[in-house]
Length: 376
Image (cartoon, rainbow, N blue to C red; front, side):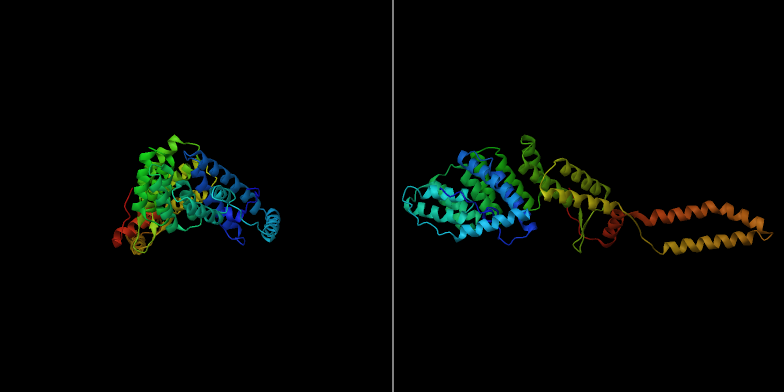
């Protein structure tokens, strides 16, 4: 198409009134989505993904700077006020128009054009797939299910179609169906890192972080510079650290052992070592380190034992005075002899009552027989 105008709000799938945190979140989400697609074996899909990543980068620069955003909004208003040309598309170019709309970041228009293409050529698997991609990007997941199913019916051995249908099922938390499609995709493209990462995402969503970590360790070892894969390795590391903690009946998740605290620290260090630019990763590092620090914080826990020890010390002082009625010097000597025992009693009290927070949490757990989250 001649008009190369790109609506950055549509690229990020956000409203024009979105605030800065919403823009940052959308940039992170869309960037992960399209970086993943850059690993496609299909040159056309790979080129589309590379273009979209560039557009997301430009959208980030334009919308996070107040002056640039104001200028873009003015241009957007002018663009919307211009009369739209009548469509003259014929049978042969609806699919190309759909691709152009997708490149412009307008999946709604892409879907309408692709629908025209499938109406004219119902046996064109590419038209059905493009229509499905547009439905997916606009969160019309039931439509995307049907449209990808049609593209698969027409082209059953296409890796991308099975993977994308798996993504559609994942968005709807239909984990079994998603796994089925990902298994087929991996049969067609063995060890494909994108699909293996999608499988790891299901493990994370179903609270099986150890399996996700095994998958992502392998994926990242073969693709050490890929930001997308490293992001989900970080997510798996965080998931394993959190799932190893103890779940109390009141819903609190706490460390109750030194091993759990060490895991929080070690996994925070590993995530930091990945040097990810995504703010979610930095937040995960801060959270894990904060939890570890809070778990190591020394706390007092008082009990009636303190009163008994105080009373015993007083009795010892009185006894020392009574046994040495010959004068102050004898009393002082007796007290001096009793000091080691007094010091030992004070040490015992401190030892029993001043502990790291994780030990206090462990004592609470053991005394109240609360629920334990499975250790890892």
